[in-house]
Amino acid sequence: MYTRHIQSLVDRLPMMPLGAGTPDPSVFEELEDAMLERLFGGALIREKTPARLCQAGLWLLAGHLEKCHEIAQSVGTPDGSLWHAIVHRGEGDFSNSIYWYRRTGEHAVYPALLAAAAPIAANDPMIARVAAQRTWNPVLFVECCRSALDGRCDADACRRIAQAEWRLLFDWCYRKATQENERENNKEEA
Image: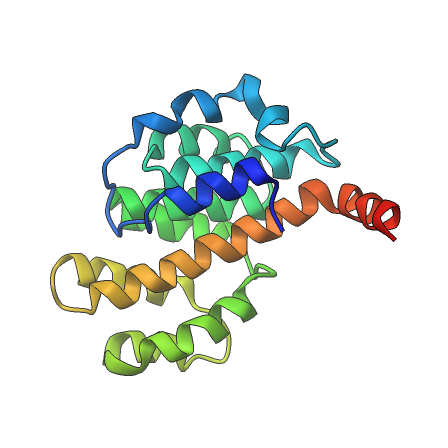
């Protein structure tokens, strides 16, 4: 689904930690602003803003929270606000994270995130409460992550849900950035 270059980065980077983690220096040159077109494999980028948010997501996955934050805070869309919320949650700035989740509003990835959380949540009552909601409640999830960092909630389950959140949002931004290109490539292959 992704370009070869992006898939290579996603495959070699570890699962996101709940906290800030340790920045991976090996990705720095690959993710710099000047490399956006190269990052997308030379394919035409349909929309530059979601492409930059993909870049932000890769910075986040690689543990470079400040680089992700720099991009996310410059994008005044629900997608940018959601990346912004995730960054602040990773920094442990939970109230700021909640603020940005609220700014995000009801995001298109939330139904799939709720579905992804359900099987993960089975072994922890606090996370089960998040998964039992009718709609995704990011504020409850932030509280679960805070509790997990304090040892009062299943940290592995929170990490797996955070990884699902990352993947769903990254996929969403990637599709927005490349949708036309994928259609054109499919026509050429047919």
